[in-house]
Length: 227
Figure 1 (tube, rainbow, N blue to C red):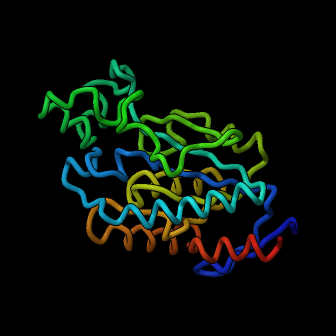
Figure 2 (figure 1 turned 45 degrees about the horizontal axis):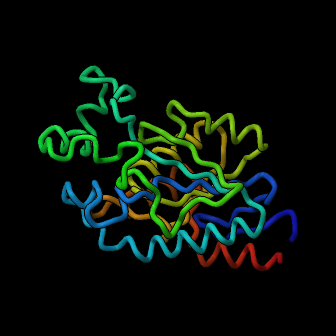
Figure 3 (figure 1 turned 90 degrees about the horizontal axis):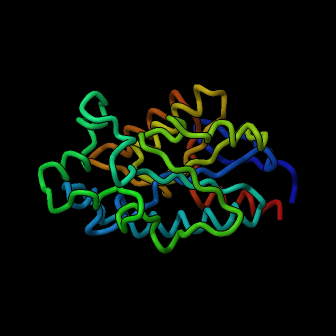
């Protein structure tokens, strides 16, 4: 494979080195993708998850084949809630999952809590040996984690980003990547938003302010064209 690929991205094509590129898979967990998961329980539509999971599976496979590191982010809290921070933490107030569990005690400790079905990555995208998994307790993959150190250690400059929710954890991670001098490329059809109009809003923000947009087919074609 050639050491560089050119993605037909928007707003313009971007040329990346395979050696300095990583794939970040954001929160592809039952909580966000499955019926009965947290997002579904609090009233968000997850009916569009199946094609996003399938596209994510194809993108992950293509990146593994190309030798691009695959880094999973996995969002959630310790069973004892020690990493939430209590009422002094904004997440205590704004996390829909935490609020739902407080309002519905029968779900206490079941939503985005480590060790639960809700927290687990969906079966179709189970990490493989050699993939990396970064646990996190806030929206951004960079908040309170070793993700930045991991990327620097691998000499990464470009990050391909897929996952859920587009307008929350995906966008937060892209914004923080941009502010840390990484070049973010969001794979639009391998992401899914929470809320009407939110996908388009994040795509606009990334296109105009924070990075580049491409599709799974475009990415796979670019990788395959150098095979």
